[in-house]
Image (cartoon, rainbow, N blue to C red):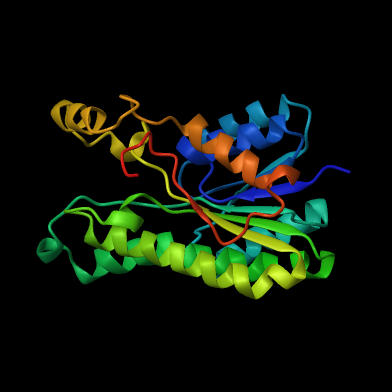
Length: 244
């Protein structure tokens, strides 16, 4: 029987790459999206071509009831959730003093609130089965902080703290909880950076390139595997040596 993976924010970018990677590993896939339906349908088509079962579900991950709908539909379809990847996230490059309270609240609700929502909702099934993997996507800025991204950095740092605490709490139930803190990845989230900014980032990366969505998907696949069975509460940062 195939295992089932739920990936939030998986209509494009890192989330889409994770969905396709895990499908190729034989997981049934639950794609989550909010506004990007056409992109989600494209990922769904690619996933189904691997031969696994897959569904795409609309839901605002910052809203508990909509998150509950996604998890309930996933369980209705597949009966069990073996992997949760909390990937959904938004960023905003802006002086902190120029940010509005609503902008701050939105970033925290999506980047941190969604991790609370989905983890809370999948855990009863995982605990019942004494099995599960929760992988939270943070950021190097959650480790070091970034100018013009104070609230984003705060939200991603909180994800790291949550990961470590939850790993201690649910480890006795056979559940691994880990965190991935990507470096600068070539996705839409960084399309607003100038060519000069990108060059500086590459120059400061020992491997002399940006990361790819597939780099992160490969790390997720490892953490889902039996080879990573003794790893929990850890922060793995695929960043090309940007921070060491």
